[in-house]
Image: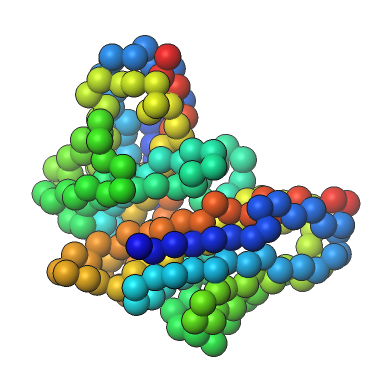
Amino acid sequence: IAGITQAPTSQILAAGRRMTLRCTQDMRHNAMYWYRQDLGLGLRLIHYSNTAGTTGKGEVPDGYSVSRANTDDFPLTLASAVPSQTSVYFCASSDSSGSPDTQYFGPGTRLTVL
Amino acid sequence: EDQVTQSPEALRLQEGESSSLNCSYTVSGLRGLFWYRQDPGKGPEFLFTLYSAGEEKEKERLKATLTKKESFLHITAPKPEDSATYLCAVQAGASGGTSYGKLTFGQGTILTVHP
């Protein structure tokens, strides 16, 4: 069981380009999340999905979009990357039927926008 | 607004020197408090969930405790392999019909254990 996989591991991207970060989980968790981690700012929620077919905005959603076509996959898209989106991105998942629900994190994608 | 403050920002210990990390929080109805460990270049690794004041959880050299305003992560006789950043996060109860499991994280404590 791999848990959560993210791809790519790292990426350097020119400003203005479109980029999709991939996230797949094999735990059959209903809820999935995208966070970004920046020095001095900690982990901040970008978007979340409580179940396949639904998504919601987190704390810092501007410039990002997500989709949840099935239970396992939760891609994050940067439509037109800007340097302020340079960060480390983590995908997480949880079985939100429990209370509280523990989130499990992937290994992360390090993104640099030049 | 939910807030989490961790202290100290960094802690250096000698191997075997026990200490504690602090996590102070304000949240509108605590659903759970979480401790994670994060190694450089890796994702956060789940350690503990605490549900209510007075609860304690243990794992090897780590023990987490919870009061109504703060949580402590006690490290007993640490080893160099305990060196990592320790993150605390809170999850609020449902409000206004929105019950997604948003976590609010602290900045973390960077722990270094010297041999």
